[in-house]
Image (tube, rainbow, N blue to C red):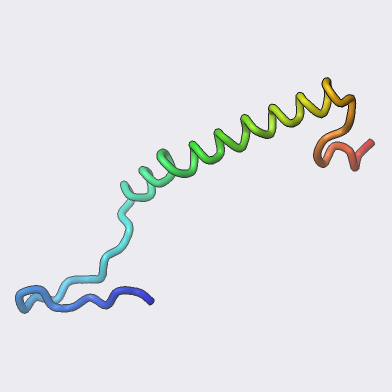
Amino acid sequence: MAKQAGPVRGMAYPKPRFTVWAWVYFGLYVCLPVLGVAFVLDLILYLAFRYLLDSCYGVLCLLQ
């Protein structure tokens, strides 16, 4: 459930929300590292399947 905004010292304030900078920090410190790790793991698996196991890896197998 979302937090309800209540009065603070008698003044009504809007409920908490993400700002533009919160989204920027989320993208830089959460999304980019996760995408970077996924890219490196995908590259390692691709190279291992392609050159060590001499097999096909991923969606490209469907096109052959």
